[in-house]
Amino acid sequence: MTTPAWVGTWRPHRPRGLISAQFPSPGPQYSIPGTTGFVGHSPTKARAPAYTFRGTKPPAAESCGPGPCYFVEPAISRNGKYVAPSAHLHGRPMTETTVTPGPSEYHFCSASPTQDEHGAFALGQLVP
Image (cartoon, rainbow, N blue to C red; front, side):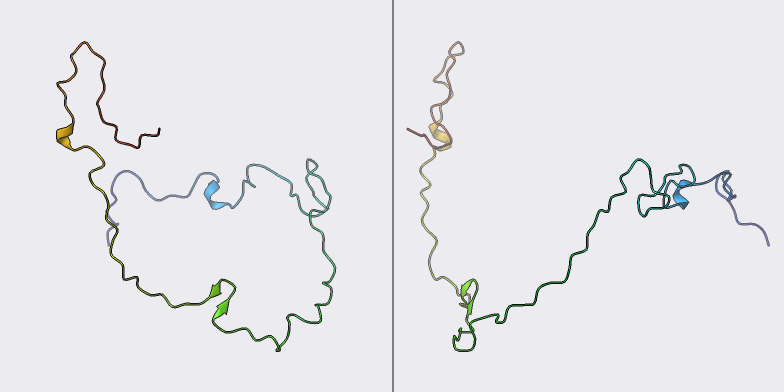
């Protein structure tokens, strides 16, 4: 049986040195001491505890609500009364389309080449 046909000059081989992608940390290159625990702790970091444990919680209150004498309707939630969605049977409001000038309202020939004149209409609201 013949060897498979290789494309190019590359052939699979063992790596000559360490490949950093094979390690989860820079451990082979740099010797960084850990920052957890007391033994072998990094001298550049403080050894004070970072987390504290709290004691137990106090007992719960005797009652969590007003009791069964106050009946709240099931349709009432913290957001108000639940109402099923419904369609609005209204037409669209009429919009006024004659507010802005049309293409025939703008004249180019009113200004001479030596005058510094702008258009007569603005495309926004005019604030008094």
